[in-house]
Length: 267
Image (cartoon, rainbow, N blue to C red; front, side):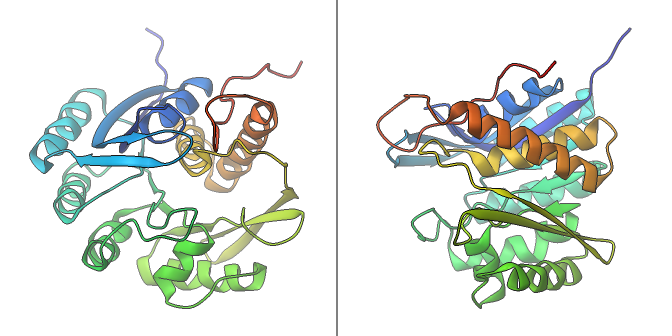
């Protein structure tokens, strides 16, 4: 029998399909993985904004994780939206119980507009209980600034932040620089005592909804396929670059539209 790697995404549902569980499943499927999912919250949102959030009870989150882990045994786990303390505790307990080989966490803590999406207590518990169980965390500039309590604004700041967070939580760190000023962006990976920089020209687009979800899911998919972390990040960056490029002219909704997760393969 042939097999394909199973990747589990633990995240919130985006009914408009651009981010969250829906973006994760599209990404994993596009990269030839098998996507399993655990829903932590149901959101009412679209390309214009988030209208409502309903957190799934923690016992149901636990039951979902247990069902997938006991039967499908995922090669990698991606974590996205974690909305409250009880769900953080539950995910941490499940990670300790099942000990998946690779866990990437995209800490969705700050909105694009700069608004905190979690309470201070939830952020503290994530840092104490969840980060130390992760293989990789992928904060953006705002989230890195929040975690370190000082601004992270340029590449040198990003390198310092990645190193400090990695030493604090004993995991690899990818600080995302999509919001750096200027026409170029750079992501900084710190892993095993060394830095890797991933630089490229920015693509002008109004369709960037779900980029963080897509990147972390792509990394999980490539690691599940056997790639080393640096190469997994490089290939995930190449994938998301094409997803942005092919999605920039899409007309879906009236605001920040989605990426194009499925595009023609190059010959």
